[in-house]
Image (cartoon, rainbow over all chains, first blue to last red; front, side, top):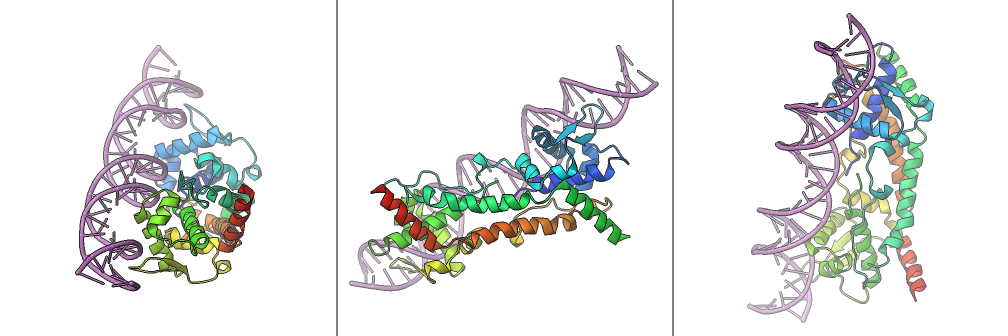
Length: 146
Length: 146
DNA sequence: GCTTGTTGTAATTTCAATAGTTACATCGAC
DNA sequence: GTCGATGTAACTATTGAAATTACAACAAGC
């Protein structure tokens, strides 16, 4: 099981917006071309990012702007906006274990705190990285190219 | 996107084996009843755990035994045995971004180290918990019940 | 006000993975 | 050889991701 590509696509979108905002009008067609996918896929992701309050999208005329500074948007903000995780739980249980079995009726309570700690560790690391890291990281990579 | 229930089912299996090994013969039917699923599902998971070298399964007569001490099997060992993650990468990219776009051709290099750090944080936390924690944890829960 | 380019979104298709189920060959102990 | 168990193939149902087509809604410029 892997986390869907929508997450990395969303980070790709943010990087493009920041990189090209002064050169081009960054539309869903433009983004689809850079990512090599369909514009509708991009628009669906933009809708999710907008619902999460991370961006504003200009209807009719087109164009994307961030609602906060690059340094104020973390990978976790993007992940949370994009991944439709049920109840916020990363790990899934088999529903309805046997209540007559001492293990079956306690398995949830037994595992919950440990699984939560694992999920927390992952999310805490996600909060360490911001979109500003993407700008500076890309700058370095482009300088190496030259 | 959530991690499949096979992982928590595998932990459930280990807990049952440890809890009932002296009282009952722990078969795939027995386990299926506690977890409330199909015996074949259990056998498939047992096959994965066996392939990873965590258990031995007695054919014909039935029965499961661990190949190591409880304290020597971590949640990560189980996760690794169960989850068929491609190349070991938790995060998926959109394949074939546009190489003519400065962002498209660098997005992988830009994100790889950060995504790896996130995955590492999760896996490191998984290595902190062992099957022994499940034994002691269940013992406490059962004492509370009484 | 009409044209143009864009976003928003519904509907559909394809593909892959999870989970469940039936069936049966294989095995080991008695 | 019988019995109870595992190993595994084959099939189905369900779900979600991703792609695609189509079109309504919108905003700006002429």
